[in-house]
Length: 278
Ligand SMILES: C[S@@+](CC[C@H](N)C(=O)[O-])C[C@H]1O[C@@H](n2cnc3c(N)ncnc32)[C@H](O)[C@@H]1O
Image (tube, rainbow, N blue to C red):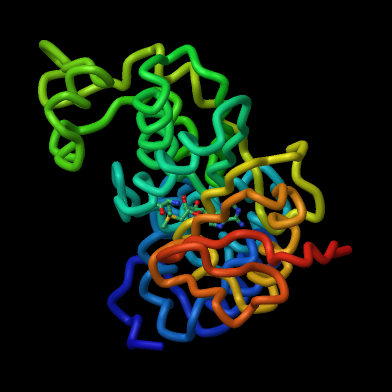
């Protein structure tokens, strides 16, 4: 660890280890050795809010106060996302929906502040040329704060640069007055997405299959390989033979062909022999 003598709160290697273990146990997130500064800056806000003096005090408080766990996890997740991130996935989604019309369920499994599930909902509305379509979208995340933001559907206007003028006009309302510089996803689109808090490392998920399409992008990178494979197997069990699994740009399962087969760029389908996993 770096020299911490000038820091506001006392924070040592033992504190960092305790944070690391707790985060792994509660959210499956593996922090590397060099993430001490990140832990310090993210949790310092909690210490300030609780008027605590040291990380040792905070960790004792956390142990005794189950309600703090949610704040602890919210503080330590990384929520970077954007509308139409990795745009080739939305082209593939539209193609799939046209080839497989009818009732479908899509699960967006680490939906962060909502840009990803709303991009999915926009794609669906375009394919059906209607908000009233047979596709259900479930969006989930472990972080209750990002879920709250997602549900409001309010974003800074400059985050919508990946949307065409036509998409902006159809799917967003421009804020006025105090909301100047912000946009809000139209209610017809918001109602097409159901948000839920789901921890992917929980032993059971409050979600019923079959799920036709799973977006699980840019979250597996925070888990160790064993956790990744266990989650991947459970997700693939929810998919039908012709289902799709969308992975993040740096998540590669090409070496797991007993579970999934490549179906495009960071896109997978269940392995053909459909082995069932326990
Ligand atoms: C970097 S964001 C990715 C957002 C979006 N999927 C995308 O690709 O733009 C990672 C998200 O995973 C969530 N996350 C981390 N650990 C999780 C867990 N154990 N269960 C569910 N979500 C988790 C974080 O809260 C965060 O919102």
